[in-house]
Length: 290
Length: 290
Image 1 (cartoon, chains in turn brown, orange):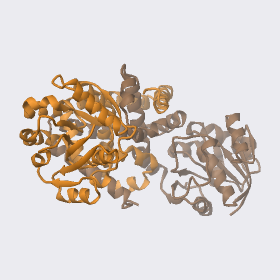
Image 2 (cartoon, helix red, strand yellow):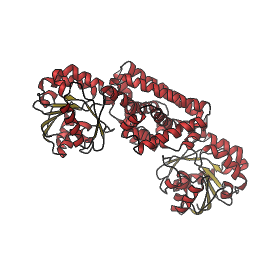
Image 3 (cartoon, one colour):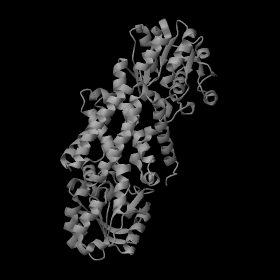
Image 4 (cartoon, one colour):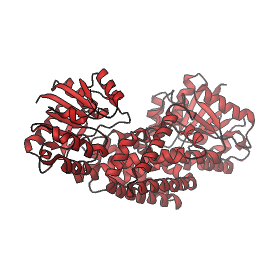
């Protein structure tokens, strides 16, 4: 497993870390980055995150034997359309999108027969920091990567993708794009929306300064993900909107249950819910759900 | 400022840390702890969190010149009733409850004329860890403590409470019990309920193991406060139920706005909300709301 020329479309936290991790493992000769921000690409070159850069994704993938598309997901269709003619027959293509049904649809619409060598991937390694400045070679160590292989894929390409992420320290698993979007709507996209909604609600109030003035450590951790990249999360939420609406409705029903405990001063009912939730979270922290 | 005998009713994270901080600053001669759990009191003695302990709060406060009540707030009325006859005329009494209207009402009902020397206090220093095992002398350094003085208080007693918390490193401020409960419903009690509700919702599903298996760092921070002490949070939520229901309704309205963006695929509207929330949180982190 060695790549002569790797093209990263979108040299942010994930794309940049992927490049640094490949380099640290000696798995590639040259990494070229492409992206919208000249300043970010310049920083990526300066930090040694990539070896060279071009503005244009199509130029970047020419001659590459490995491509990672790691841009906000709403850009994927245009990126796929632009790179499709330049993809060589032996080039393995992956993405790092946080949603999968939309990414797969965009790839099918744009890549033609080259869809066979596109293995969709989602490294679960987001953070509230973004850009090449935040990239690091160890980002994927111990993290999960979900592959959502396509019926068009050759088994050896899926295995190559699996082996590659495993070589970077990740724990790789596989599911369908549909299952992926359902799972991550619940455990990732919904919490992000809730954190953003709380900060949005508080910050719009007349006494916002007072409220934030008394917000403490619990609030800081709860809302950390509300410092995530707005464009990236806009795209994720819109792309997975149907699933996310279902999750919002489920959560609202749960919150309605809590509200009823409060209105009825049902201390026992409320305590049971709190205690069950804490117990579940403790089981999770102990690794009982791994 | 020096106390000969300090009684701590409830030697948990807050009560235990208060004792350790007083000792570290050389502000007291002897600390006696009282509480429901013999095992926790034994641990508190063993760790040097308190110098002695008794099961009974009334016995603990006898002869004390400083009392801190730091139990779950639903116990306050019984504690006040039991200690009232034993409180000396020169004893300063404080609490560490996370709600204030209910605590003040309980104190007024139980303490009689001794209400004059009860200065309600709320140290904003909660954590998901609890018990004497979690106590530390530095817990209050840099943290806020809110006093909600009563019309019955003498100014010099309020000032003494202020000076005492400041001596432990806290940033002390004052507001009315009503204002306190309104502010903390929004920035503390609501986030706790949301975190508990999310974990509760996920853990009750047939595919809970799969969902938790893919939950990552963002989820961990978002739900950290769902590992808080269920009895303590039951009491807080029930005590502040009227305010909290209002907050739940405000939050539900905000979440409804987000849901509409998703349904209408309004990417611009959604991005504006996410970007505004992130900007507000960044201002908070920079200390612009202090």
